[in-house]
Image 1: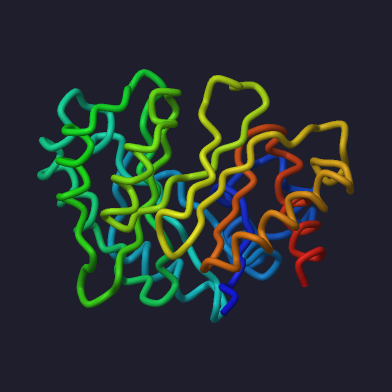
Image 2 (image 1 turned 60 degrees about the vertical axis):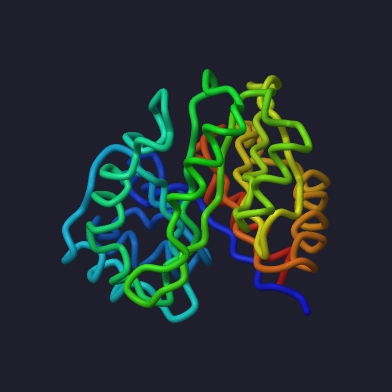
Length: 249
């Protein structure tokens, strides 16, 4: 069975996209409505820094079409700490803000760790034990974005698999020290592609996009895929996402 492949970008409010991705005279209030019909997923990044009111989550749900999915970046107060198992209160605050109002548009939660955070098996298992499998009757899918090479070891892969969480495949040509882990630890794959370039109208060459499409098809053989063009040449990321969606159609 092949999983669904959803492709998108990080966020939807970015001034340089106006007149490039968004039509010149599009009302700013309609940008999410437009983006959610050009793409198939968006990673909400603002949740890394702050919380939002339930009304915001319901508004985002109602402005987007059926089948569209939001992934959510977890609060930095959960992951940027010395002892991860102490994040319980911060995790509750993050999960209780109203994100389950998205309903079936709620995608995976990306728990991103700083590059200085090293792999400590006991520390990370304490963290994984706290991650709930559901909230308000909705399944929660968790992905771990680690940025220290100490994580690229079988012990970490096995620990992620034990708890059924995905390890984010993060690709950034400007950060070669970050581990690029492609391990089937969950029933879905989460990828963050951060190597788009401004001199390419679609962020990457056609050959590079073909390679990404092939990788996404391979990932889909083991479950749903969520792939986001993030950072890099941000102005080109919507075009890269649309070009990849066309290749996968």
